Image 1 (cartoon, rainbow, N blue to C red):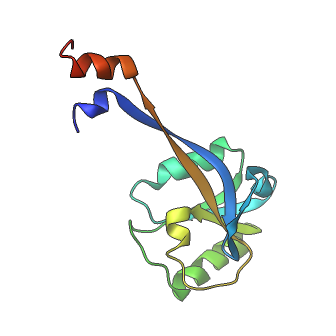
Image 2 (image 1 turned 45 degrees about the vertical axis):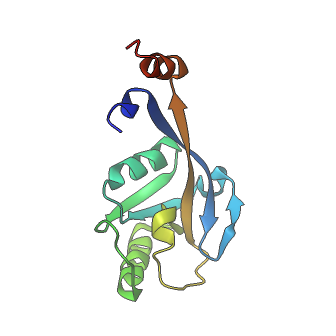
Length: 134
């Protein structure tokens, strides 16, 4: 695995957003542009997610961090809705990982950023390594 890191890397690319009320429907990235948002995340390093939202030009008014692998409950949703009201926001945005950890809710103002992982590899370096040339 350590050797493989010499040859393989990955990039993340946002491809759309999904709403909690229609999780199978992929909406365009532009769907959240121009809206005031509160972003929240329960991943280990939420800064990369928040930075990605900034890079997309989203108007994120508040960033709320939860512990990694957090399972959200009604109290959390109330806290997030309070942040929306406090910031004059119109929607919440989170990661797909966090969207599935939310309690059942038909709120149409909760969205997840959909991200694709694109692996990159250096074919020549891999072949050279396998052939014992590096």
